[in-house]
Amino acid sequence: MLNGSVRLRLLVAFVAGVVGLALPFAAGADDGADRTVVVLLFDGWAPSLLQSIPAPALDRMRREGAWTHKMLPAFPTISLVNQTTISTGCWPEHHGIVTNVFLDPSRGEYDHSHDADWLTGCEHLHQAAERQGVRAAALGWVGRYSSTRGDLATYASSERNFAAFPSDPERAEQVLEQLRLADDKRPRLILAYFKGPDGAEHFKGMDSDETRQAVIESDACVGKILAGIDALAFRDRVTLIVTTDHGMIPVTHDVNISKILLNHNIEAQYRSSGTTSFLYFADHNQIGRAFTELSGYKEFDVVRKDAQPADWHLGTGPRVADLILSTHPPYFIEDISRWPKWAHWLGTWGPEFLPATFALKATHGYPADTPGVAGIFYVWGSGIAPAHEVESIRAIDLHPTVTHLLGVAPGKQVDGQVARKFLTPSLN
Image (cartoon, rainbow, N blue to C red):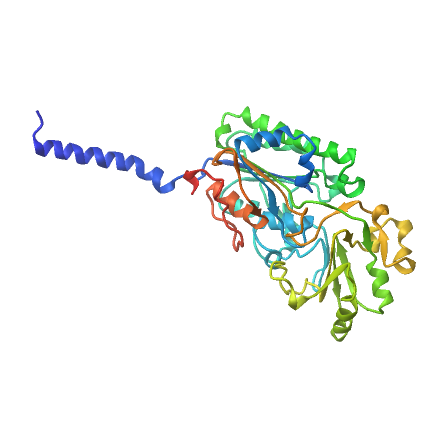
């Protein structure tokens, strides 16, 4: 029979052993060291499309994971701005991609470029991961390469322009190929861009058969990747995120900015995309008159560079125009160079507002609180609480949430925060 002293020593040893076993888990909670995160970004997947079009793969993610139909993009709510915002976790005022087409006084014209050298600050997801020793794949992902530094991810797809992008089913197969690599080669972060329903919505309309088929195909790509994850030996350590860069709104008229400036004798360089037009003035003495005259239009707002709404987050850097026109639905703005060639004469001789039918049937770019421009966000798998709807998530929050799931620090200078509401307790 053990005496009191021996029993006390054994009890202390037992408690110390239990604490010793528990502390590493408690201290690290879930450090993400062996988790793989896959992010699929489908261009223009508007939540409204899911009201009437079947999406069984997303239905599964909703049942087994977390979701919201209020992924809030940055202004202007267009593709390159928000693909960069999602990837960096920064507002445009910090990463520097302030619209899809803009002028830089040093570098010239930016036009939908994926070159990371255009960043003025912040880091893309794959850059932050690779810097911390996490192997990444960037497939059609914005900022996957630098014109001066080469590829910025271990696996970076080679296409340099949208025309060279593979079909979405082919992109899904590329994702699966990355997941099937041997342990010593496989990336733990896979970022993949998909064309999604964006093009069909723009040119055929949101209620068209083409858009319906694009949504069905997008969901099938998600289903294929889910099935591929199910077949992996490490399936319990994979997190899948499906999101988009913006929603979509039907439109009826194009603002003929060329004709409007001509009618008012306003001399400015202009670059338009989606629902905004950036006006750059060589003679700043002309800005006041231009602001006054353009403010008479009810179809759009005119905003001075130094008097932007607080939630725009464009900043006042040299890439931001002196005046910004922001249209109201159902109006949009596209420059003459984006119109069909046969219609270029309308920039000089046409009306100030043109029927949208010859150009677009739906678009995006309006302020983020405009109904219809929010996007989808679904997350499933390791570290995710099941069957959980969240009110919203901001585009800037995806980057820090992904790095948190990976167990690494976010990129240098991040404006977003980890979205914790759908994470399991071990990650909070």
